[in-house]
Length: 98
Image (cartoon, rainbow, N blue to C red):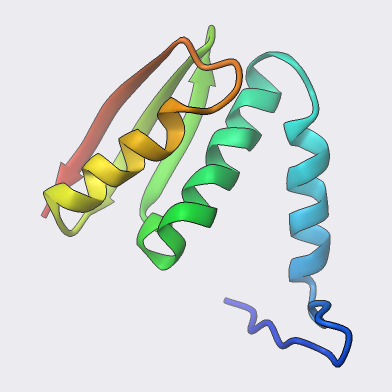
């Protein structure tokens, strides 16, 4: 995993800036591609490192959450994070708690 450092202007000085830009561009798209990008970005913003084991994919407007998390609270927070995603009609929570 790449480390990100902040420069004097508050900009990321590693390849993470490109990944964030690409995610933002994809989030502007319509349909399931844009919905998937928006849901993944919301997970990362709200859960930080706890989102590492969570995969979000959009299928016909529904967001499917898959993966493994360490607690029920993280699974609940993931569901809540993506519920408000623009364009989502439902959230299917297939997260496994271990």
